[in-house]
Image (tube, rainbow, N blue to C red):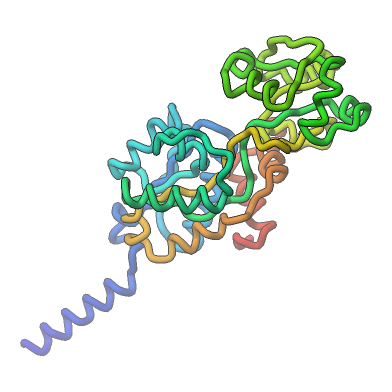
Length: 305
C-alpha cells in the first residue's frame, strides 16, 4: 500500500509539471492580464502582445482596452496586482510615475536601464525591450512648402517661418513645453499663428489653410502616402523621447516561464512609420485592430499563419 501511494504521488507530481504554468486546471492563475491606454496604437499593441502570449505560452489572456486616465490609473492597478503588464512610454514612466523632470539628454538605452532599476526597486516591476518607435511631438509641414523652402530639420524652418502660418490646437499653443518652447528653442517667428481643432489639422494642411502644425510621430495620417506631409527632424533635441516598451510585474514573469522571451519579440519590431501605417489602417480604413496586429506579426514571421 505504501508503494502504491508513493507511485501515485510521483505520478501526480509529474502531471503537475507536465501541465505547466498555463494549465487549464489552473486557469485563473494562468491568465495573463493586459491593460492598454485609450489610444488606437495601444489597442493594436495590446492585441500583438495577446496574440504572441497565446501562441507561445498557450495561456488565457485577459485584454482590457482603453483604461481611462492611462498611466495614472493603470500604474496603481498594476501595483495592486489587477493587471500583469501593459505597453508604456519611457517619458511617461519617467515623469508621471517616478516623478523626474523630462530629460532629453538621456539616450534611450540609458533611460531604459534607469527605468528598469527604479521600477524593480519601487514596484517589483520591470521594462522589457523597446518596440522601436518613438511617439513624441514633431513638426509637420505641407509637402509643397517643405520642398519650396528646402525644409528637412526644424532649424531649417527659422528662415521660412515669417512667410508661413502655424496652426495648432489650443493646448499645444498655450503649454510652456509646447509652442512657446518650440519657438524659443529654434528661433521661430511665424507670419501667422492660428488655433485649430486637433482633429482637423491634417485637413487644414492639405487645403492650404495652414502650412505647419504640431503632430505626433505615429499619427495615423502620417502613415498614408496620400497625405503629402513632411515631418521635420528635431535636430536640437527639444522633445523628450516616448519610446514604447512593456511594463510587467516580476510576479507575472515568475508565474509564466518564457513570458519575458515572448515579450522580447516586440523589441525593435516597429518604426515610427510602421506604427503610423498600422494606426492608419484602423482609424482611416476601418480595419479591426486584432486583424491589423495579426497580419503585421505574421508578415514579420512572429506569428504562425
